[in-house]
Length: 223
Image (cartoon, rainbow, N blue to C red):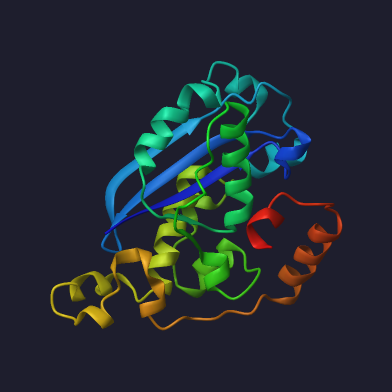
C-alpha cells in the first residue's frame, strides 16, 4: 500500500491573503516503510517573502527568483502523489495552500475525494512536529537551523511510522490476519493510537494563532 508524506513551506499563514507556496517536499512510503522515492521543488511565489517566513525556512526572494512557479511544477507534483492517500502534519494548513494554488490554475484541489492522514490529529491535538520527533527518539539534527519541506516530509514519515506501530509493522503484512494488518500506512486505526497532550507552550501558541485569524481556510475541511 502506498502513502505519500507531504510538506510545504510558504510566504505566510493564509492563502486567502495572497500568501503562496515556496517549497514542496514529498516522501513515498510503501507498506509503512520509506521506499527511497522522493519529490522536491523550490517554487517562485512571485511576491515578497516577509521576514518572519524567511526566519522559518531561510528562503529569500533572490534565491527563488530563477525557480519555477507553481503552475510549472504542478503536473510533476500531481504525477508523483497520484491517487495515493496523503500524510501531513496539520493537514488543513498544507491542503489549504495546495488547493488554493491549484484553484488559481482552474484545477481541482488534491483533497476532494482523497484519504488524508494527519499526525497532529493522530497525536490528539496541537503538538509540534519537533516534539513528536523528540518523543519518538527521531534525530532532529537535520532540522537544527531551519525548516525545509523535504526534510520535514522525511521527519513526518518517520513520526507516522512510529505512531502506527513502528517499522516492524511492515513485516506483519504476510502473516497477520486481515483484521490485524496495518493495511499499509493508510489505515492507522488498526494500530494502538498513542495520544499526546500539547504542552503549555504549544497550547498557548495554538490559541494565540487561532485568535488572530478570521474565517481561516481550513474551516471548510473541519466543519
